[in-house]
Length: 105
Image (cartoon, rainbow, N blue to C red; front, top):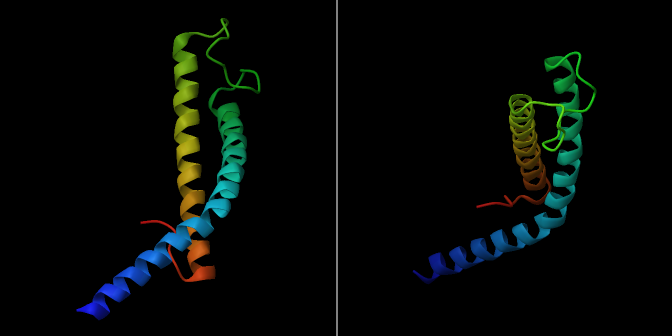
């Protein structure tokens, strides 16, 4: 019974250390993900809304209707969420390959 408790404690300690070691890696990947997502969104917006300026409408720009602003925001949120999930998951897998421990859970 005590062997199981020792193993559980070691796994918990390993998991905690993996989370701590992953934090800087996760922070850098989040920043890179935000930059990548912004570039992807701009390219997608150019193709989805031809004839519009290169930059999507911002909520306080009066020359755009609410519908255009909401659609641009919806598209931006979906792209950012998708890119973040891909980069977070890929970063966690890479971290696991390097260290042998999964940084989450």
